[in-house]
Length: 260
Image (cartoon, rainbow, N blue to C red; front, side):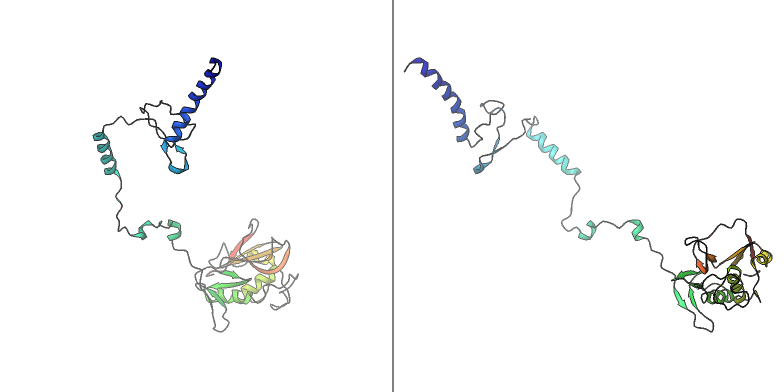
C-alpha cells in the first residue's frame, strides 16, 4: 500500500482505540479521565446498563485508616442520640405564647325581668347591641332605669323642641333627650333647655352620668356611652342615639349629680 494511504489509516486507528476501550469498560465513549489511564486518579463511577457516568471526587483522602476511624467516632460522639421509643407527641411544635393565652370572654348579656327591667351586661360599662344599650350590672338602679328608658326613644328622629312640652314625644332635640334621661334617673322633674344645663348639678364629671353643656347644644355620657343627637358619621342632627365614639368637649361645661 502506498505510504500516502497508510498515514491517515494510522491516525484513524489512534482515534478509535480509546473509544472502543471505554465502551468495553462500561464508560461513556467520550469520557477522558483527567489523570490518564494509569489508575492513579479515580475514574468515573460506572452506572451499569444505562451506560452513563457520575463524576466522583478527585481529591484523595490523605488520612490513614486509623485516623479516619478516629474522626468517625469523634463525630458520632457529638451527634444527638435519637431514641427508638421517642414519644411522637414530643415532635409536635409548641403553640405560640399568644395562642396559649386565655382569650377574654365576651361580657355576659342578661335580661332583668323585674318591673321596669331591661337588658343588662356584666361589669361596669354599658355596651351596644343593634343600637340598644345594655346597662352594666354594677350600675345603680336609677342609672339602669335611665338607660332602659332611653332605649325606648333611641332611633326617633330629631325634632326641634321635641321632648320639652312632654317627656313623651314623636321626636327629640338635644336638651329634650338629656332631660328625658335625667328624668328617668330621678334627677329632673321637667325638661330644661341646653343653656340651663351649664348650671345643672355640680361641676365636673360624674361616676355614671356626665352632662356636657354649652350654649346651643348638650349631650351626656352614661356608663361609658355617649348619648347624643349629633352623628358625626352621617353629619348633622339625627335624633337620640347611643354612640361608642366620643366627641371634642372643648367649650362644654361638664356637670354631674352628686352620687351619680
